Length: 238
Image (cartoon, rainbow, N blue to C red; front, side):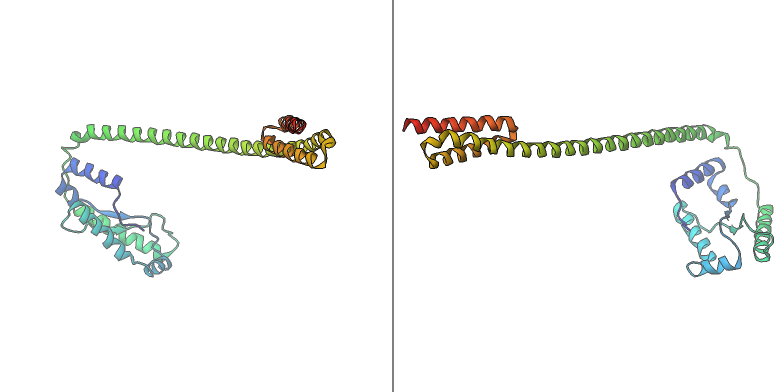
């Protein structure tokens, strides 16, 4: 259980203070806690962490500090979900309800002459609430759209990665074929000039084919053929 005063609660208090006046409002205020079971078992269980009395004290302390009060506000625990068939719950409900009734009967009336003065403020607050609701719904839609766009981008990136991997696989296969072709072309062409020249030309062609493999198998073959021809020309000029 939290004993803090949130912003919405604080705004409501300030509104009522404006309607009835600070002193009149607090002099005729009570705090009713309705969400605490008053069965013997539940009270005993809660007491291991914090007693109900301590909860009431903590909440009142928060009120005093937040609204600059000089005293605690009368506080009652009235379990709205009590079971009439359980004597412990029924008795506590009746005792708290009777105490609250006596307090209200003994209280003085409050002037409502300032109620009309805050009517415009109420309307303005309602407009602000409606505006915030619209903005929240808009933000939720934008967040959902952003999530969908991110998912779409992720899928596209994944597809691109797969396509790139497949393309690299094809290039490797093409490069391997180009190297073989380079050796086949270079060796026979230069064979008449001796095994050494043929091997050198084949090595040159293989290196060229490997370097050109990134451009595809066909480019590698062309490069290999050119390299072999260059080597042949050099050998013939010697």
